[in-house]
Length: 161
Image (cartoon, rainbow, N blue to C red; front, top):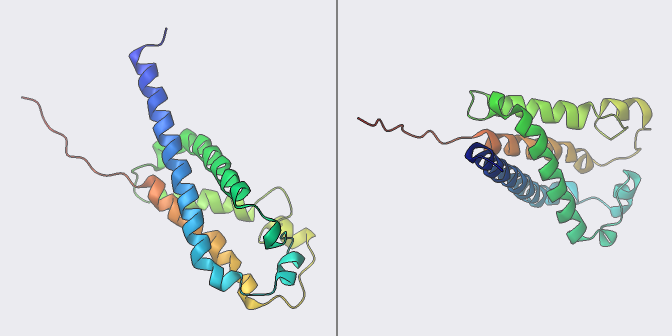
């Protein structure tokens, strides 16, 4: 039988994972919408050169489901380090640096924008500047995510006499 502390911790985890997941999905959607005029203004053929599927093949449902799964996975990992970032001075910067270093620059697979990509991927010839602006989107979304996730309202403690 579970004691009150276990029940409380379970509810706290669910609340935390929900916050992290919703924050990820919302910041992903907002940044994508803001970046679309900059990053998707080039020809779809260039996007295919970069490895994208044609936009008419991509299901919005699959995108949303994928972002929910990513948000839940982020929640699990951030739960492990939450005490060192949530409500801490510059906690957002620490989280953003972790996400950018591990998730973008230091991926284990060769992805565009990563160290592995720089080593193993051939440069894309005649890539429009607007395509390169996609890196701004890639850096902005985890920045907004990190700020929101680590922000914690300061509550006044009431003293009981």
